[in-house]
Image (cartoon, rainbow, N blue to C red; front, side, top):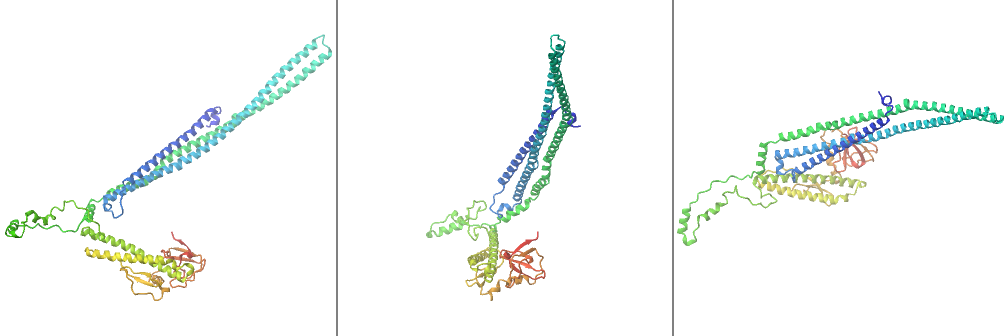
Length: 531
């Protein structure tokens, strides 16, 4: 069953129904938009809540962060933040897959419906125009036929009139005959217009309008299907993120199970253990002997009372419960109890070691770069590195001094410093290499051949090593002679295997297919690393 057959005479009903359907789509789009706003506001509030209760800590060494209960609370806040992200994803997907898509589809349907209604209107106007022509033809036929009857009657009357002349009778008959022909022509025209109208009316009711109604029916059914898909997407959008939301909830559960009250107690001990020994027994003091001595030695001064004698031990009593004034913080952490002082000194040593290692690496990289510039002036000016080399050397010396200082304090505190020892190349004013120890002093070692010293490390890299797997390919943009020791020559356009990335010193280690390896300037090649 279709609208064109069953509802051929219900144009107004079909027009109203299709308009109502489009309004329903628009109403659903507005509903989903408000739902996305609710999701976005909910996600925003969750993020603000997570941010509000996230513990403000200065760093990872904050004491509270070592408690499992505190860390688990942070995990809960992170999971809530991730959960908020999933709510935002729901809002975003609903907006993209439902609101925007349905809005565009709705505009297309409106335009299509407008086209069909215009076609129906044109067909209606055409039929009405034909009907007007038919009506006009009919009225003309009626008018001319009556006029023909009147002239015929007049001619007959004139013919019977004995007083009428033969000319009058002849004229009346000619007039009647002419009117009869005009009436006949009008009759034929009316018949033709009637046939035309009936044909167009048949076309209108059995072809044109049913076809338009069926198109509107198809449009409405497509609208219903699309709306049904929108209903399903409303559910599927949330179902899609449910597994991730489930993981967030599982993470919160896991955070609860990770709390270990026994370990938290151990952390309290570790953080606050002073290392002091418990106080010994208070010695008995015989006041009577003191009084006797004071009486016998009255000539030496005023006798001392019992409270004065007790004063020297007063500081040992009840110190456990007394309020302690805030100690003055010192660089060697001497204000801390022995155990805590050793830990803080050890932490400080580790920080200095990391900073020192960074400066050492920077110094070595600058040394390599300076030698390369000296041998290949086209790559850069060695003098431009002087300030950086000087600053790096000063940093190494300063950190080495701090390292020795804190190692000494740690030894005094009864700790054991297990710090790395460093040897790094620095440059004197003549460009020669000096070897710098952790104590900041320069040794007397110098490189016999400065032009090749920087590549000695390159040679060491190739000795006693198994061939490592390439990590990518590189293509030479320029030719490189590779005249210096540790480097490898290459031609423009040559493809080489990358063995080691540029570590910040401007050199990349490569290998040919024949097994030859060496360093090349990173700026001379385009590198494509394996993913």
